[in-house]
Image (cartoon, rainbow, N blue to C red; front, side):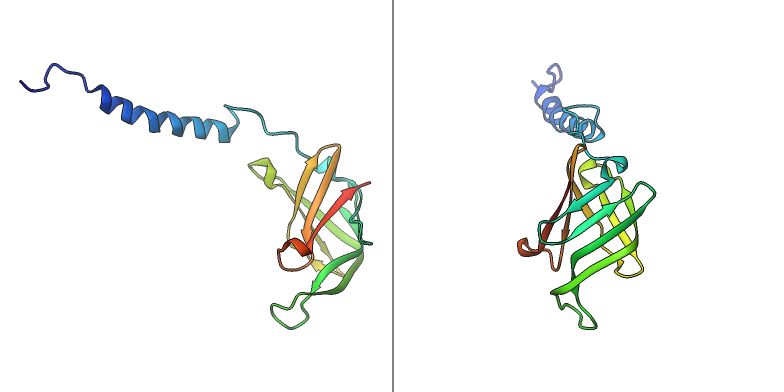
Length: 151
């Protein structure tokens, strides 16, 4: 009678499965297990001239300076929540920073300039040889999504 001589295999299996899944998840996130992240653009890859197909362009230079021309920006003026796309930003004296994140697909570019002010971080997509910069010219909706492609 009793279970004194029996081994609790079901209990060990029930505990081992979540533990193995946790270890595999941590290993994958850390890059030790699973496929590598696809190559992503680095700061050096981001340097160049970008165009959005709507008359806007952006030049990122290796010294951290940037030039914006005709980039749409929400013109909220003094009204909170107003997203008129009538404002175009032209700034020849802007600065840019590259923010590397973990996981790598969250890397961003932030622009700051005397004429256009500080921009929200812009997302980086694409491969090192063909990076793209994604930003929104208003509230985050498909109609305001802009893609700057390097030329």
